[in-house]
Length: 189
Image (cartoon, rainbow, N blue to C red; front, side):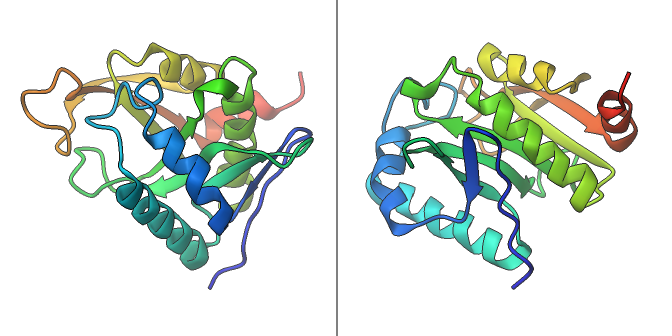
């Protein structure tokens, strides 16, 4: 096991998954509003399997898609973090930054806040050269988070190979942020 990284902000703790996260995560994954830009909602078994995969990734690498907890009340609100992008994507190998929060926590800046601290991990601790993010073209909310993070849209539109060919969600946009862009943005003005 690598050293476990658990970033935090004034309002949020990004941490390893716990058994008590399974029920609220399953509720989040069964919410049609949260899963609007995914091919399908997840049943409890699929959601629990995702927790197992995400937890194992963090245990192996020290980082991953962390469970996000509000510090004020210890509530689980979703996940934010990093993972190795699927190898079949046209721009792999790379590391992806991503998020999925319960809809009751949208509009409070939590995704941007947690993603910004994740970018600190990417460039200051892991010293990666680049991070990417991608989503269905229709997912404007996530694209706005990517833009707030200082990511730039890549002109490449791609067909996500894990989304059914007949799905309107198959076409995806790609955003990138490299270390030079990060350090330029992070430098005091």
